[in-house]
Length: 117
Picture 1 (cartoon, rainbow, N blue to C red):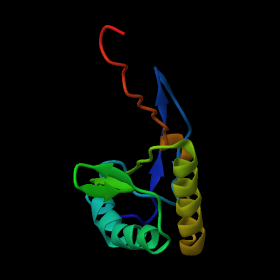
Picture 2: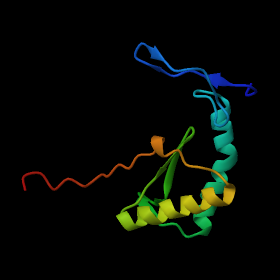
Picture 3: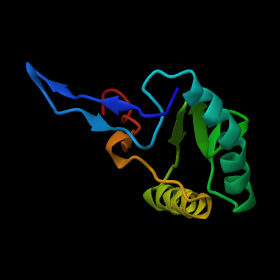
Picture 4: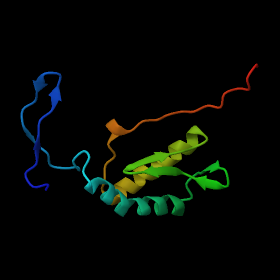
């Protein structure tokens, strides 16, 4: 399935030259969530063992949300998010993995002030 894989990129009506794909999982591959499931418990345990900062959500306290092959780190304060990012960086370094920064976003939510103020 992944031997001698190549690709072409299309932008508008233009196509790139054929190139070899030497790493990664094909977009939409059923292998992606399976690989994610193999590694995700290790990431969760790593954060737990490092006393990662947590956010309260009802009666639960958590540092991340997991869905399919995505992870969302959550924090109440910028310094807590920074700590989580440093822990993820440490984990990736230990496992010799890389984060795809082009698929990484930071979203900041703020509580809206009470209506009428």
